[in-house]
Image (tube, rainbow, N blue to C red; front, top):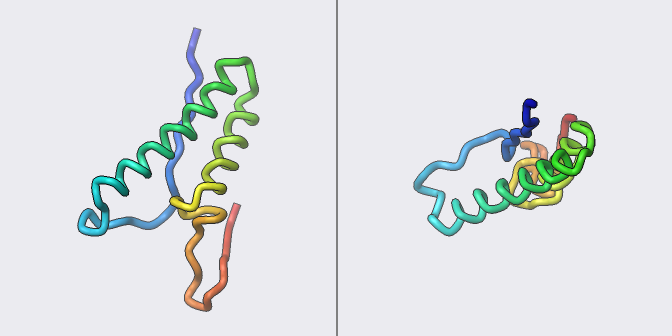
Amino acid sequence: MVKAVIAIHGGAGAITRSAMSAEKEQAYRQALQEIVTQGQQILAQGGSALDAVTEAVRLLEECPLFNAGKGAVFTHQGTHELDA
């Protein structure tokens, strides 16, 4: 039997190493791990791939660390422009 897995990323853009403290990196890694774990739990409990991915995306958008939803960066005009 093949085990289904999900993969996520925290959005577009880049943070330079000089702007990334060890504490900040740990916060990003912990948030990503928690989000993946939540999605994997849905799959492990027999949930659909769509449910797992939907929940992972929702959690990414709720987390202000990532360039999506609450963490989205502003455009040059000072507004948010989000694509799905």
